[in-house]
Image (cartoon, rainbow, N blue to C red; front, side, top):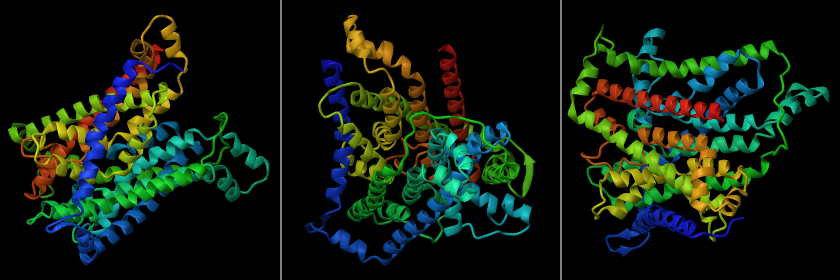
Length: 539
């Protein structure tokens, strides 16, 4: 392995300084603030929280609904992934399922609630199709639907990715050995995926437990811990100290989830090679699973259809005459246009600088021998553990009296840190698969370490870099939990503006802005797909 170079130390120093200033210090500030009282330091904030019945009930509600969501989402995601990898349904249908199930990731979570309202409300599209209200949308049931829609795409991606690394020849061997359907399914599917299934459950639970957007729109009187934290911090009488204590308590479920993931990792199987063979024909299985998966996709898409219909009519559902008025009103409003521009600025800067930071972090960890490089994995674990609302609140405390308060710089840095884990792991996995001697060969040929990185390493990982950029951009466009405490009137983004418009019941403006986010994210996704395919062709 190459000796430590001066450039490596500079990169390492910069990355460590970034995370020390924008991850470690904010969390320390939050922790210290949680012990501050009017009479000095103490545990009275935590005592006050534990004696608050409403707050304890909210925490219990969050645990309850997040657990139910995690069970449902994991089962649905497993069925979808199994349908794609273990059936012989029509291939174009598989492609539609794989693509369509990711649609919610292109929209802010706060929009899900409004789509549910316009679909299942008294005058909702689906309500009119059935001729009656199917259920009460505000409260537990509305939250459950929103959480399932929100967490299904990332959970599906996790399980679907694990399916691609399974050796399918074991399916055939199990049948030849005379195993029954249940035994074969348990031994060849469930056991190899046990760690992934556990990870999917934890991922869904944590995402639901810490989300603010969905309960902000359809939570009703069913209080959850995220909305309680919002009310404590931005209510009529803000209480920063109790807010800090609540934020610290929100860390515990996530920390428990990370520990459980570490334990479940021992159940992951590792194959020496993969055999992608043709599966045995089973028409009844294929028809049943194909139908179930199609119904899931149709049901999810049906909820969002109204979002694209409502702003195109005069007054949904009372006057259904087509009009562009709502779109033109938004584009003529300098306030709303500026908010959209702010979102683009945050997303582009987050994608560019986030990709650079995550890539450099992975590069230092995988391709150098610099001392302390394993700290990158620790940073990745911490960012994966800290909920967006907690991170945003810690930024508020640390930078509250500084010139950085309410700036785009803070919003961008918070978003980069919040979503660091996944791009970092993408880069780490990609760089680990490359020839470890490339840097040494470059040095023997007279190239510096940095030249080898720019001329050899990066060109061979362009596909991953594009994927990292896309991930950062899309999440920066839709995030609300991480930045809800950081935006101001000048730095407001679309997701936070939607929360403001909710108070004035301006749902047409909400849907138009949501469509703008959707189209922007879809365009970026398609462009990234194009450049990735072009890169593969050039190879």
